[in-house]
Length: 216
Image 1 (cartoon, helix red, strand yellow):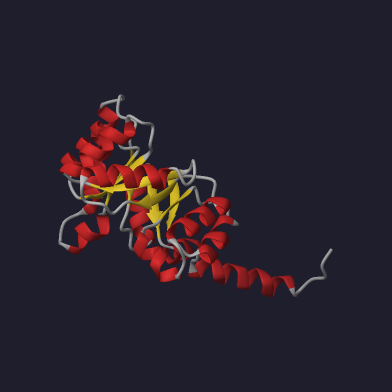
Image 2: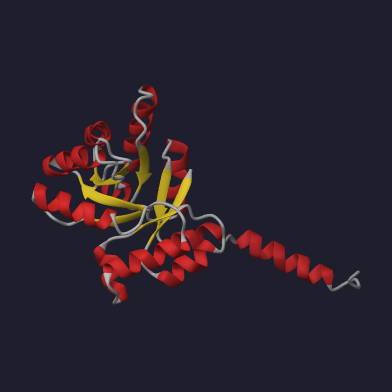
């Protein structure tokens, strides 16, 4: 399973890139706004750090404006994947843009039917928001498992399942077990995945024992 980082903070991205485990980035205007920079400038800055898919959101609601915006955003860099929300307008835009070779991440997926339709329309990625489903009392992992089963049943579907709205390390484990192709995670969740108290205790023990002999 690939790991994407869900952030627009360039320092967090540079730090994570050094670990060699980040395959791509997902971001949006809200995340960029927190950084106090121009959207296009930050997307291009990120592209210099991570050589992988870089999801950038489109916000237009009318089909012609949405397609125009998506083409403009996609032109910023070859790695850009335009994010388009699920819906009638979204599906029409995905169908049109994918036929032009533009890569699309269909977001705000909350059902298997939505994911299946987005895949048929030509989405490169579909993004089920598991955390938001869990917040409402549903089980987001069921959605990931059912999407994975259906996509596997039909080899003609090349769309990847990008698990989003991940809240903690256990979510990453669960979506991997459920068959997601990608998990996009906040920087703090990546940090939590690295740490474990038993690892810290083991390092402390090794260091204490090392003091009992002279180094070679």
